[in-house]
Picture (cartoon, rainbow over the protein chains, first blue to last red):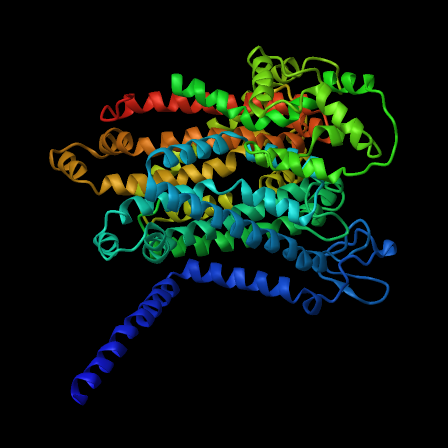
Length: 304
Length: 336
């Protein structure tokens, strides 16, 4: 009797291993793409600087020093402190503000993507799985959502409700579900017809269980790619709203807000507007590169 | 056609809650007898208002009664105001009333300018179309050749450059690009004007700013589409038959790669119309985008509403045109 049992144990161990091996294969394939790796490094740096802003930055981002206002990059102030990227119109250190500015950007990015991702996943699953009327209603809703100039809608809502972190997150989150819903729906439409789903039905699984246990895990791949690339878009939107004065309010440093301040001094102090813009550019570029790499490794046929 | 019409009508649905804040509403409010008692239970009706079904997201913009009435208005007054404005009518009755006005082009008077909101927006439309159109021209003129060359000369230096530029373009925030262009071309070299509308020179910087993201997107799409098509059997057949290189690329391949490009152009036009909000603000371009940003700051909701409605309608119409274009490009697709 002991022989079959041990045979079974070996079998089980063998069955468990491929999952982990798959992960390693995936990581290796991703790592082979230089640009994706570069993107990952950039994103990591931004996340680390957002988390460790208080330790990384030598200056207080909101501490004003009018005597040392509008100093060019690399200048040394009276106290002998070097301002690597210069100071702004209130004498605040630009590098410090850039490091701290990563916080609202990433916070809005992650939170809004979480909201729209979950919403879109739900809509996509239901729409694709049940089809018919529900599908029609959701897809028309998606069309309507897409027909509105998003930024205008966001400005209108935020203008009335007043700009604050939760409001911005909810407004962006609630209005960005369409891409997720469409991609997930597409995946579900083909998954629905697969044998393992029919098998689950034949075994007596209810719709809810089939959706959550069998279809959702398989629809997660395209969803993840969309979420990554959408994060880049959300960060740009966040900074655009801050630029228009509808983002997280001062004195909290935001990249968009710094740009708006710097715009006034464009003819005398170029560094005010240049560096925060570079921060946005590099962050978004990093996320885009990583997202492209993710797409190419996970799902090369996915068109976005 | 019918579907599009229905779609247009449904599209105004989320616009409805702002209806109440027209000048009419203010007049009605002025006529209300006001008593400044304690403002008890103000949050309660608001919560009730919020839970009312459709248009939920835009209900979040707030109860018009609570926005228009002074903060110390009593719950009684709020109730009276609602009754007078018809906010207590069923949702579809209110919506129908709004729609009847909107379809006749009546979005109410601008609070700020005292003119009909619709006229105000229509007046600014040409400027926005000019800018979006110019941006689209810039995008297409740069992106399609760049995408084709990248695909045909794959892995060449040119391909590399255009891929990198496209990636940068897709990651660059519009408003930053605008400011940098002003910094270089207006401040440093004093070559081009940084604001206003009029001559062709005024158009250059805003059009490039607005068009860059679209350029990047179309370049990438053209490249990947062309790469896919160039690997197809019929291209090999054409080459085997002795067709020379240019016709193969421009006639056989581009025509087949054009469908996703046309789709994205339709979608991108929406991006352009929406993106004009920021670009117009930076370059002080007198279009609908700038008008609506100012209107939002002034709480001039009839104007916002008319602007959103007209921009969205334009977008829907453009996509209808795109759908019709498909049948010409690909006879396999038939409109039902």
